[in-house]
Image (cartoon, rainbow, N blue to C red; front, side):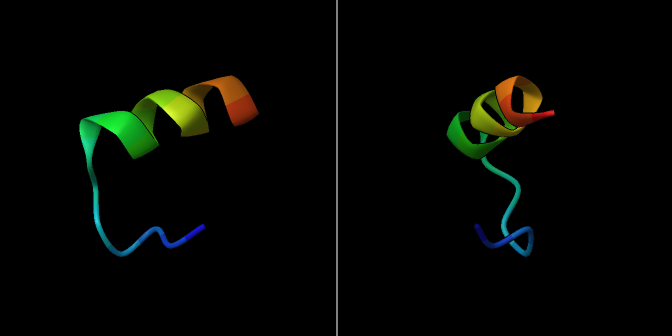
Length: 18
């Protein structure tokens, strides 16, 4: 996943990914 763009959706997914 690209961490270049900080979107709420990606942020939510990233939070679960951590």
